[in-house]
Image (cartoon, rainbow, N blue to C red; front, side):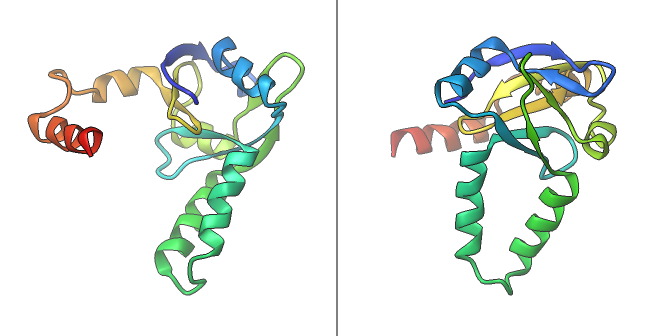
Length: 147
């Protein structure tokens, strides 16, 4: 399970060196293949390929006529590429996604349970709520945690 924030940099070739804590988790499961994508163009999502394949299996069970599924697949495939981690623990982020999400310098690499999210650090920090979670969001999370 991926958790926490690990600041990093995207190199001049568009590669992200996977933070050691996350790389250790992937090495323990012998994962070297990933699907790098986005659902909104604001961040990269790095999915270990076995986890992404679970998403694809769930989508395959949905109706092929479901417009939401088709739209989701259009978006994730437009931004997405299957990539392999190199011997130095680096992943190449797709050019279209790097450009759209401004992933060209300082980034946050955050664990999101089953995948890793990569945000432009400056943009992400500007969008963080100054006061933390709103009361409404805090209550919604509390309800989920107490269920």
